[in-house]
Image 1 (tube, rainbow, N blue to C red):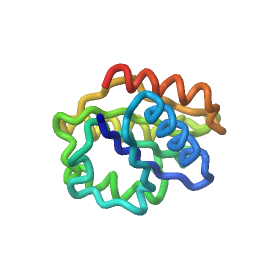
Image 2: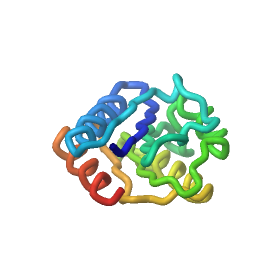
Image 3: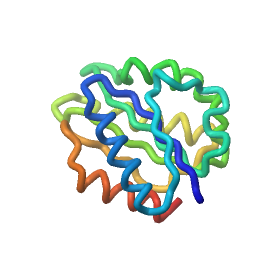
Image 4: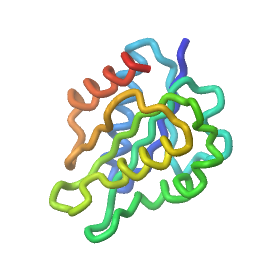
Length: 146
């Protein structure tokens, strides 16, 4: 059975909710999933033993892109995660009224692909509260390409 790791950083709970929707959708597609908060995981070797890694992070800040606080230490040490050659997808929640809508998603994708991760689907950028059907459809696309 294929195994996926879903790591999220969430302050208001929206990205955590999206992570749970992603996990449920992947489970229905036959994936074994592990869902962890970024505050509960270390970057060192985090991708080991997983066929797919998904990162979820909310974005803060109007003038600059600010990653969710719990995700920042993981982002800073992402080079230790063992992402080279790993299949990857990224999602996040934000607010379209900000200049850098879901900019954390773009920053994570850029850094992870720079470390050799392979994107399997376009990112999911959620404006406000995540809609189960939208998140599930995206997760099914990820599963189909992973």
